[in-house]
Length: 278
Figure (cartoon, rainbow, N blue to C red):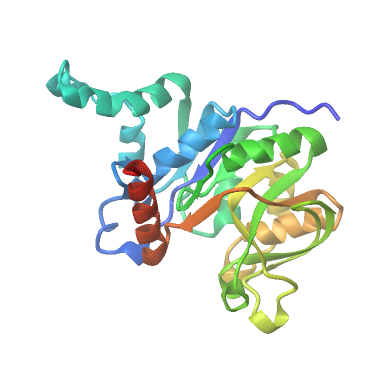
């Protein structure tokens, strides 16, 4: 099946980041650094490595620092011109040169599904990636989103990333039920948002990496609010799963939940040891 190359990646970055207060009172949680690089930059680098060059940011109030980060700072660049510190901006300059960035606001925080629906104006009628920046994924070889785009080229349907989690933690995730297609790939038959452990169909949890077809926008408009009164992407994807249009992929790599303090500390320690190995 010939499918068009995916060029756009959507980043829902409108959340409040309340688990990191007071640090996130005036600073977006996506700008929290792992070492010297903010979480959002890791996500954009992963998208670019998968061939996506158009970054669509779903922002909210108090998120201007994200747009400023992916822009040229003339005063700063003048101050460090021809000094050793100039090289510290090489990675972000590279992203600014290779990618375009567009922004629209999610006026009310009504769930991930609503954030994705708000992004329709930036995405249009094409398949696209979605990266949740506080799920920081690392891989010694091929980045997770690049792994997923290859699957999309082969299958031409929605692809969601999954990982196995402890049974007691399933209530924090969307959980899938599915039939194994091949190693680490499942045809999804059912999805539940944050089930109780005793009602969970599996321990395969959805994490913050998706490839979605434009059909998702129509389905989201027809999906009623779900858990916590929010528009859940899990509920919309479940509609497509019932039609055999969703694959779940157990990705190669490691994920850090940087939306939680323990995960953020683990990621910091991991990347510090990796950078200073030997």
